[in-house]
Structure formats: C-alpha cells, structure tokens
Image (cartoon, rainbow, N blue to C red; front, side, top):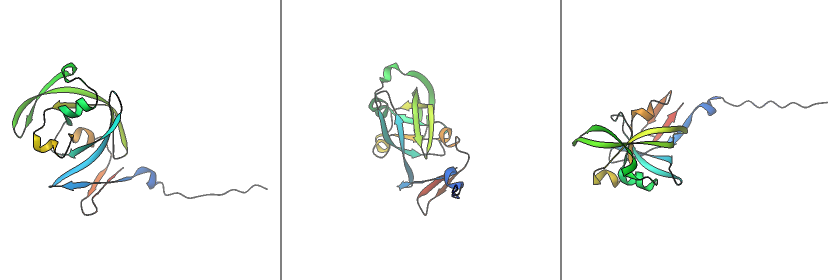
Length: 146
C-alpha cells in the first residue's frame, strides 16, 4: 500500500518578495549586490524614480576593481547641478529585490560629497522597469515585487 501526501502551498509565496526599505532624509536607501571584477559585494543605493539611467560613483567603480580610464566614454548627463560627462560600465550582475540582472549597464560619474556619504549610486527606472509589479509601503518600510 502506498501513502500519498499532498501539501498545498500558496503559489503567491513564490511570486512575491518583501524586502526592507531604509528611508533616510526623505531618500529611499536600498542594498544591491553587485558582482565586480574581483568579488561580489553589497552597496547602498538611493532609489530614484526620477532618474532614467542608473549611475554609480567613480569610487564605487574602483572598489569593484575597475580602472576608470579603461571605461568607455558615455553621454553627457543632465543633473540638478548641470551637464556632466560620464563613462559606461556593464556590471556582470546586479541583484536587488530578489531579481538578478546580468550585464546591467550603468553610467559612472563623480558624485557630490553629500551623496557619497549615504550611497554608492542611484538605482533608476532602467532597473525598476524590469519588474512586472512593484509596490512601496512607506508605513511598513517594505517593497513588494512580483
């Protein structure tokens, strides 16, 4: 005689992820895992829905083991402080909110000192649009993706 066990699992558990948010001085701070040339490390980013392209600071690129002078020249970016020159970098892998994105292209720029005190870069809409659904709960300080 065979015994068959059936365990019902809520399939939504596999489709959604809740991750914590840090809100500091009206900025959403998230931790992303980035695979660099030498190793994989966690970095803090400001989540910025007003930024179309994600960017990292020059120093963050150096900590990832990259030589800034070997990076391809990028476009001029418009910032609150005016137009600046950037370099282009393809990160082997960026992991955030349970999503892994391979060969993710970011711009590399010199950040103002006040930003480097709290973050290593900005996550923009180019990354956020890779999710089907994303919901921020500011009261609970969580983000839900699916």
